[in-house]
Image (cartoon, rainbow, N blue to C red; front, side, top):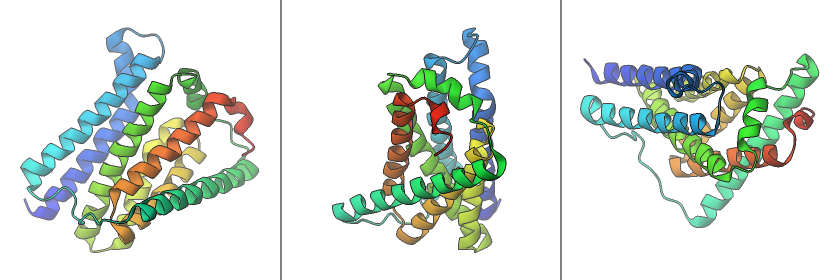
Length: 233
């Protein structure tokens, strides 16, 4: 198998495993643990499996591809650049996401995701769960979506634009399990922003930090404000 073939197989493997985990992992854990509904333990176990999926992709890369996991060399920047980049990325995503949500609410009057309403009760006062969820999302999703998939798509098709769009589309699809248009379009938008940044500056650590911060602030807001009151934002 050619190297591009190995890259393609790795991309399919990474996305398929993540998609299956998003769709079926929690119901499967409920069956195994004999839980009637989602609870903090079930959700925590599901995050552990995501770390296992990432480890499997690392193993695939080491054993099958036998190439560096990061095809783009990680660039170093000053502390001030880190801070400025994280803050700028956060505000671009937050403002852009709020605008997209407002447009969707105006045109479609979309209802709030039932899954988010269900999960809000799990996050209430459970700061360990919030941090573990944000850390998992920041590390696993950025390493696989941007660090692994994006450069390989670009290298296979010799197209930076396709690399950006493919990683963003897959990122949006992974969030479709929340059952709303906004939970696909907004992650797609964030995926485009993150992918462009990664292409320009080749620093995955900044994206991990920003992803963690974006999710952490969002979950903390949900922790103190009833999500049903956020539909206008």
